[in-house]
Length: 119
Length: 111
Image (cartoon, rainbow over all chains, first blue to last red):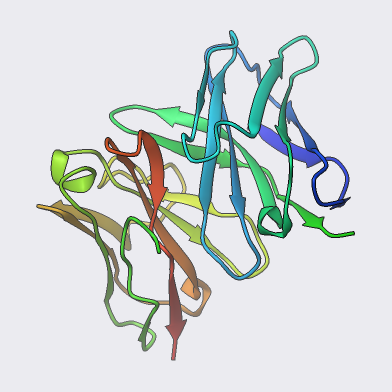
């Protein structure tokens, strides 16, 4: 069964860039879409975007100007960058594999990693 | 303020049936976009519970079921068990926002 693991710094300073990597194991990235979703402490979920294994990307328009998602299938990884961060970007960040049947949804999730934005 | 509206909390006794509503609008559920549900146990990542409105992934008990009507969807949990105590989120697609949208989450308490 596919497993996903997020990694990256747990603390980022305001105005700097948040960078995370998701490593996929137990299966190939080929043929699938891969997504980032975040959850501020004590709050709900927010979709950031997804990327196809071939590199085609769809971003949440509300964050598009600050978010970059890339994929490296040779390493079985995809990544997230959020620039010009503020305290509002403090959240648990999840990576997920996208299911696409009739609708689109997050079928498998990583355990999540907490990123705190603070000086 | 979430695009999809869920009750903040619901509760029920073991063995009972509870439902969680998810109310959207004409730009998401009302347009016919599918609704998906996730279960988030305390301190863990969300887990897909229902996809495409009423389908259960392998391993999800048939005590969980989903439905949709008009601009709303519902998650029903029958034969409530203590292990069902968790936060539940609905998710769909919104054509006006061109984005996946989530409900604010509902905390289920098993009395």
